[in-house]
Image (tube, rainbow, N blue to C red; front, side):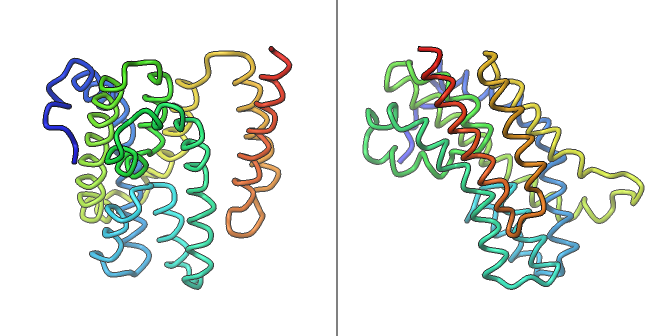
Length: 230
């Protein structure tokens, strides 16, 4: 179970406040999800239940939107899995630090490994084991509580948002913000641009599979550039 002292430690406090900075731009994203549930025609409680079960905003929106459009459960689930597949690459990146953690944390941590938590924690892997764990738990719990709360709020606020106010811009803005914070070298910038181009070219592929191909292509290019750099 999470350590009670996590939020009280120095790195626990840092994780909490660092997470708050990324929570604010994610609020419209949560409202978009609530609006998607309303427009899908699914039972409200069923749509919201994907938040604690999946805890993956982009995959949730993909699943709910496709079900609302009449797609089969299998097709919608496949598309959601493809969109969520990027978390596998997050796991690969975090594997070295996770191997030094207690067993209970290695079971719990993947559930909290959303985009924002990865962006915050990937650069903290050199911290002492306990300090990293406190930071990760504080950031993860903060985002979990935020997502549970604001996706629920979005179910009721979404329908009253004026029709002329398009809040779907929140999704690309959120991910662009995370991308900018993660780019700290020209190699990463090249990989990001390349992956975006591949995503654009393959945007019409079924079940959002073009996104997965773009992730794989970006990963391969990143490995090649890293090898050349060395």
